[in-house]
View 1 (spheres, rainbow, N blue to C red):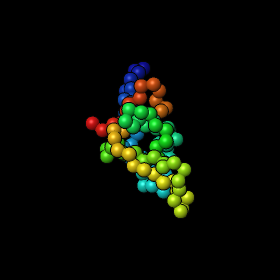
View 2 (view 1 turned 180 degrees about the vertical axis):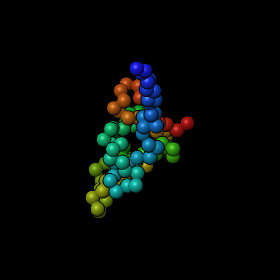
View 3 (view 1 turned 90 degrees about the vertical axis):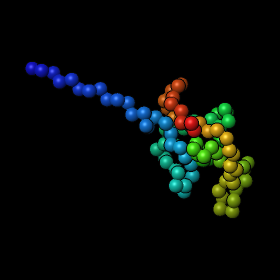
View 4 (view 1 turned 60 degrees about the vertical axis):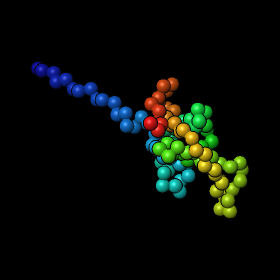
Length: 102
């Protein structure tokens, strides 16, 4: 009886970094519930932020809520801040792969 060796699966690193553009607003085309449930950490200008509404790594900006101000439809007013953005999945431990602009 010969034993066949099964190849070990190579880890899929394409799923280890978050998308380049993501929004927490369900009406946005960049909304992805599965990605948000995993937990995405954001570093903007060398500071970890938890108040990000939307980000774009490739364009180098984030949107944050402007205080408690809302528009006439009840949506929060946001301001766009530009600078270096880095993102990672929080469920990957202490040293996860980071998505950033090269």
